[in-house]
Length: 264
Image (cartoon, rainbow, N blue to C red; front, side, top):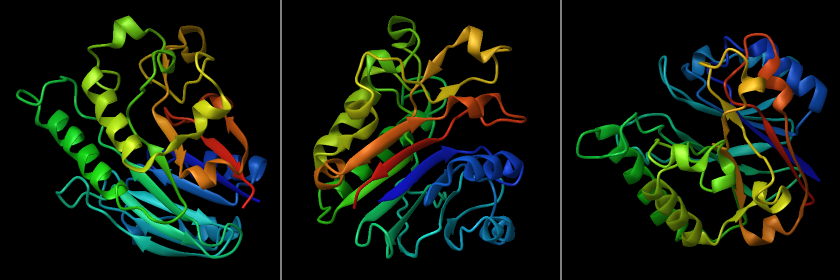
């Protein structure tokens, strides 16, 4: 059995106190972080070492983006893909060597895509669609049991957002983004673990804007964070939990952590 968590932490150094709280309370074997906003030498290695996460793969850059996978079980860095095609640190892949041996775990931070859902007037939106297309071409050649987790920055289903009609023209829920994400899913036959375990249209959000003074009362959430798996891995999933309580912690991220347990 191996438990894997994903969390867009929105600056790992700033939010190390709530990371420590989360891993102390829930103790995932592996934690995949996105938007760490630091270079590898600035990453809080010592803090994670003390928490028992003695195996780490960090792909960071100065001030922005960045991903890190920290683990209690042995792993080795497996890959770094530049799906953004501009050198940004948005992916790191590892191979598990202990519990879950042989499984590949991909940690990705898909670009947000700016504000205007039109690549002609918003280059960031075009970069997001191109990122997804490169991911799809990569996924077409996967030949090992794999999980891909992280901040996909797309809420694909109607029930993945607080108001489907209101958000159809809002970046993260537009039809063109949903279609691009579907092409990526089809390229490998991924299973969307979240929606297999918490079936639509049951409420399921992982992100709430900082703009809302009271995120709970407002509850304008979106499911932007995902955990997908190869079919042979998805069949072994035993639990999947969303930890909304973390959105209420001191100096929270705007995302909350998700955990999947797999009987490998």
